[in-house]
Length: 251
Image (cartoon, rainbow, N blue to C red; front, side, top):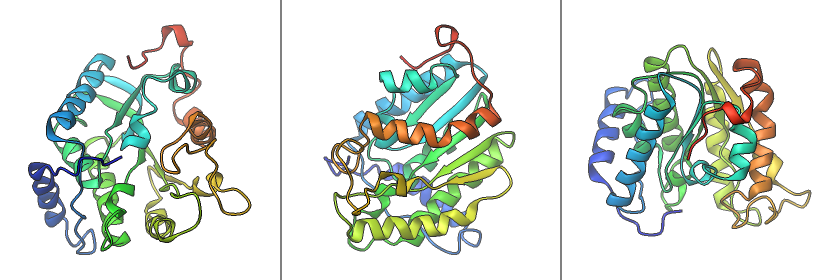
């Protein structure tokens, strides 16, 4: 998910500036500096999302906001099967932390259209470092939610729990569970919190490769679990969607 360990200082500074301006609202926490897969690669994906949003037009049904767990869904048969009936735009970039997503949303990816709903799954990449603090990752999630509500007040938001990592229980799972404990309290008004973390755990606490092929990223069955968990709420907010052959699907 984060192989090249290259920062994008402009993204981090912009995100830190936003969080500083909202320090009281975010309980005086700041985000952990994140890594991405390289500036050129990242900019290309940023522009890809901008293009997909423009192609979709001035109204979309669903924007999926996140990191590689979201991004790897795009363009797959699984994506088309679940979301081909909707104007759905995949706004995920691999390696992104909350600060990178915040920068993207500040810099155009909430502009020029109206969404009926957003699905937000972000924060796991803020937790890889030994000194990472769940409260700081959660603060970044809160900043993203606040910005979406400010710029897209008509939209409903499905806030996803962070997913467990690792084949077996360990500290990585504990830190993500701690973030989930905090962000679950953000539910209310337009925000619905959806906890699917437990759906990926076997009775003995392990994760199956059928659900997460590398115990981090989702396999097709893992995406089915995610889609099935949120589909009732999607239909409640957006409806059944169009026949697949008439829907706007990502390339």
